[in-house]
Amino acid sequence: MSIAIRNVSKAFGNFHALKDVNLDIESGELIALLGPSGCGKTTLLRIIAGLETADQGNILFSGEDTTDVHVRERNVGFVFQHYALFRHMSVFDNVAFGLRMRPKATRPSEAAIKQKVMDLLKLVQLDWLADRFPAQLSGGQRQRIALARALAVEPKVLLLDEPFGALDAKVRKELRRWLRRLHDELHVTSIFVTHDQEEALEVADRVVLMNSGVVEQVGSPQQVWDHPASPFVYGFLGDVNLFHGRAHEGEMLLGDAASGVRLQSPEHATAQNAQAQAYVRPHDLEITPYTPGQAHQGIAAKLVRAIVVGPIARLELEPLGGSASGAKDILEAHIAAQSYAALGLKEGDEVVATPRKARVFVQEDPALSI
Image 1 (cartoon, rainbow, N blue to C red):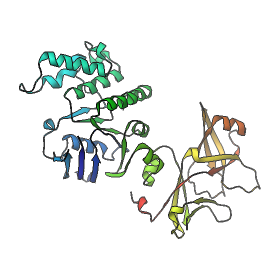
Image 2 (tube, one colour; image 1 turned 120 degrees about the vertical axis):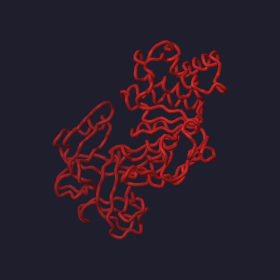
Image 3 (cartoon, rainbow, N blue to C red; image 1 turned 90 degrees about the vertical axis):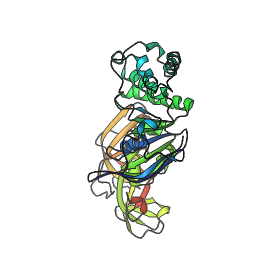
Image 4 (tube, rainbow, N blue to C red; image 1 turned 90 degrees about the horizontal axis):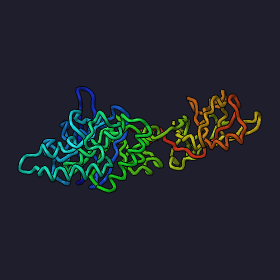
């Protein structure tokens, strides 16, 4: 089932949770609504479900306007962060609940319900726990049972609100892979809400980045990572270093003309000495030892902390006074642990950080309007 969201707005008092949101979701897609707390992603999910009413706008399921259709009639399955399983019911009875609550005319026979429930429990690989109660299950198992229960009524749309948020990191990672495999098998149109960018990028077909009630960008995980549409998207997706400077005719200058760093930004060839921001990922900073008095094309900085875990060395760098780098905070660089060892650096040493790749946003650029 495809979903079309048209001009949806929602306010709670003076707080505008959604502002004229438009979005198209294709049938069988797995979409992630990603953004910080308060960005409107859960409100949008609840409006799609029929649990909230939009102040204006429409929700269409496969071209049919469902704006005024009751939640019970929308054939939507839900999975919430805190499982919402019935504690007094066995795993089997939890999954069977939605089928048993159907009107008598459409309710399957008890034999058909048993077959359906056991098939679903096998699908989520927990058929051996059918007689257990929720309190006897781990968090990851409970969430898989919650998903089986949501799928039991054969929903046309599956909605998941921070489904793995209450689980520890290892279980969360396992369930992410499992959800992706399950979706590839079932192809139910699915929308899940998360504030975890790694989760969204790993699981979703497309990512919808939201901020302050508006959609900032929609694209595949690779598209939004490689081509962020705005400073917000760049800053939200992973760690990033921010530099301030001036853009002029396709070049951005950090610091003064004599000793500053020049970044190429051909996309801003028409800029005339405009205020600009440059975003540089930690792995796009090249690190070399600093030699006083020697010319260098980079930002002189002091290594204040080195965290070497596994194959990556995470370096925290403090720009040196007079470097005029345009960086207001500590810089973070990620280099191979092997490279760090070869450099022979220790905390307190001075280095040169040279951006290999940067994304420049000019102040008057429409991309800055967030």
